[in-house]
Length: 298
Image 1 (tube, helix red, strand yellow):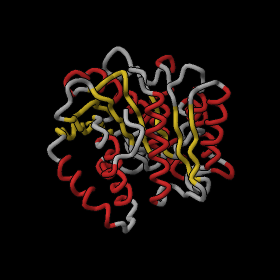
Image 2 (cartoon, rainbow, N blue to C red):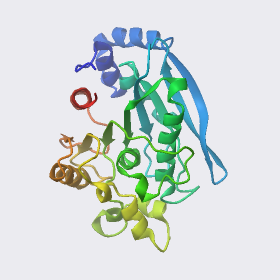
Image 3 (tube, rainbow, N blue to C red):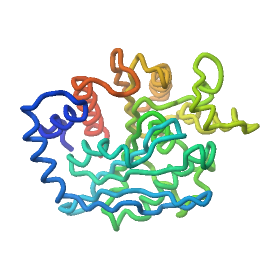
Image 4 (cartoon, helix red, strand yellow):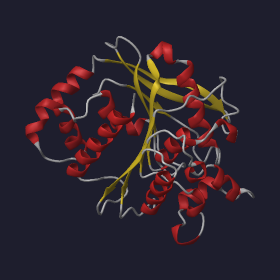
């Protein structure tokens, strides 16, 4: 795997961050024109039916691959109660530009089903990917899960929750595949922390609802509940001034992973809020991400 950011992708980062660096645009435009013919895009494939909903994924498959390729699996943010996979397609671009496959995942929002439904769905999507790996060229030894905010939480739970927790019991297939790495963008690591007190957040309260066992559910779906020494490598990105997901969530995850001797890295964005980081910080962050993946994917 390459350890550098290709020139075209640097332009893409700047474009996504609305930075006015026109000298890069010709390279970005050239890559964008090329990539249109480089991928087979299969939208809205049903991977699960639950609560009367058809849950779908979009698949991006490189046409010129001569075998299974690393696969980027993305869960969108929105506090588990809002957002959509369609609104987050641009987040796939850095991985598509590397020649990876990508799977963009829809899951049940809080208005359809309260916690832990979104966690169950994210695990079921992983099983679907394993069952369909041969058809779409997914390398099941190099599955990388990622997401932003609530999606970062789902990426963490997808890669950290063991089958013994029982949250994948309703999924089709016999086994949830292990992931090779987790890229966590300012994800929630302690759900219970957001239900009361100074860190209470309305989105978390809405996702848990008034279930009588909501604190037990919160613990069951919190990544910090599953820290142990056999986890995949984890890289977290978090702004230290995030008003939506406390920066301390990333710090505590990093501390506990270090204690458990899990390969991990915390990339802090100084004065960073809840995403929307400046272009220079985005270049630094993606450099760290791809260096981390190059070092930790076989």
